[in-house]
Image (cartoon, rainbow, N blue to C red):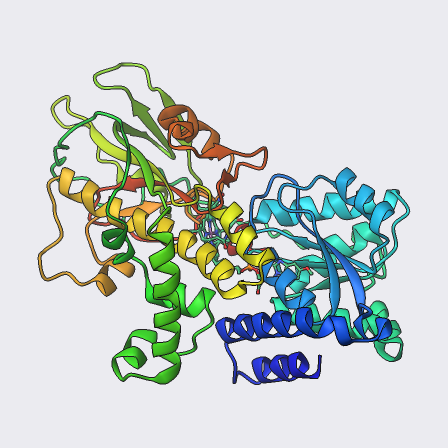
Length: 485
Ligand code: B1M
C-alpha cells in the first residue's frame, strides 16, 4: 500500500505518467495476489467501497475504468456497474453493496445534465453517502451549482482519477472527512443562483460577410452511399495524432515525437509498450466507415440536404449563428446554386470500437491494466484517425486532393481545404441532430447504435459533416458554456 501511495505522490509531482501508474498497479496486483495467502485478514481489509457507473444514455468507459483501476489498486473495493446506468440500478446497487461513496462518470454535456437528475433520484431514495463525479465536459462549477444542490449532500468533482483517489482517501479518513463533506455540500437548492441575462439587440444577419459566395461549385466523384470495412489498420494508425494517444491518454508530458527521436527512455518505453498493444490489436481491431455526399442548399441559418436531383429536401438542419463578430453559421459554407447545380455536403460515421469494451474488460480483470487502458485509448484515437483518413479521401473525391508535401501535423491542425464538424462541438452543439444523421446514413449497418442520450455505441466512434468551402473555419456559435458545463 505504501508503494502505491508513493506512486500517487510521484504522479501528483508529475514524476510519473498515467502509463507508469498503470504498470505500477499491475505490479501491485500481482504482488497482493501472491502475498494475500500470507497476510492476516485484517491486513487485507479494504479501505472502503465505491459503486462506479457511467450515467444513463452515455457509453463513455475509458475514464471510468481508469478510476476503477486506480481505486482498486489503492485498497478500495469497486463495484463497476458499467455504462448507460439508470438511477434505479444505482439505487439497487446501493442497497445491495452498502458503498461508502458513489462515482458517476460521463463524457458529454448531456451526461452532466443526467448527473443532476440522477443525484436528485438518489436523494429521493434516501441516499446520503458522498457522490464523486467526473467527465471530460464536466466542471467544478457545474458540480457545485447544479449537481450538489439537487443531491443536498456532498458531491465532489474529480478532474482525474488520482483526484478521485485523493477525495476517497480524505472521505474515508475520520480526521479529514467532515471538512471534505462540508466543503462539497451545497448550501441552497441551486435554484437561488441568479444569472443576469443581458439582452443585446442582434442585427439580423443572414450570411457572414467573411464567407465568399462567388466561388465555383466543385464536382464530386460520386453521390453513392459507401459503407465498408477499412482494411489497412497501419495506414489509419499513421493518421493518429501522437499528442492525443501518447499525451492525452497515456499521459506523456511534452513533445512525444521529438523526445522519441531523441531516444528519450520514457518515450521509447511508452512507444514500445504501445506497439505491443498495437500488435495484439492488429489481430482483431476492425475499422468501419459509412459516408455519402448529399446535394445541399442553404436557406438562411438552415442547411437542406437532397437526394440526387430531388426537389424536396431529405432533411433540413438548423444551425445557430454567431450573434457578433463574423456572425458565422455552418450553413454559410454551402454555395448558392449555380446554373441549376447544387453544392454538396458529405456526412460520415466511423468506428473502431467493435469488441473493444469486452477485450479491455478482460485485460482489466486479469490485471493487465496498461493493455486494457492502452487498447481503449488506441480504439478511440483510431476512430479519430479514421475520421482524418476518410476526410482526406473525401477531399480527393471532391477534386481537391492534398498537395503531396502536406504533413500529418498540418492535417492534425486541418491546414487543408474545407473542414469537418461533429455534432456536439461548438459550431453545431445540438447533439439531437445525430438522430437525423442516423436516418440519412444508417450507421447501424457498420455496427454503430445511437443511445437515448444521442451518443454512439461503441464509444470509439465519430460522426461528422464535411464542407468544401475554402473559407471554412472552426468557430463557436453559442457561448462556450454549451460545450462545457
Ligand atoms: Co469527444 N467530445 N466526442 N471524443 N472529446 C468532447 C467531450 C468535447 C467536450 C469536445 C469539444 O466540444 N470541444 C465534446 C462534448 C461537448 C458536448 O457535450 N456537447 C465532444 C463531442 C461532442 C464528441 C462527439 C459527440 C463528436 C461526434 O462524433 N459527433 C463524439 C461522441 C462519441 C460517442 O458518442 N461515442 C466524441 C468522440 C470522441 C472520441 C471517441 C474521438 C474521443 C474519445 C472520447 C472518450 O474519451 N471516450 C473524444 C475525445 C478524446 C474528446 C476530448 C478531446 C478528450 C476527452 C478525454 O480526455 N477522454 C474532449 C474534449 C476535452 O475534454 N478536451 C471531447 C479521456 C478520458 C480518460 O478522460 O473521460 O475526462 P475523461 O475521464 C477522466 C476524468 O474526467 C475523471 O478521471 C478520468 C481519468 O483521468 N473522471 C472521473 C471521469 N469519470 C470519473 C468518475 C469518478 C472520478 C473521476 O468517480 C469516482
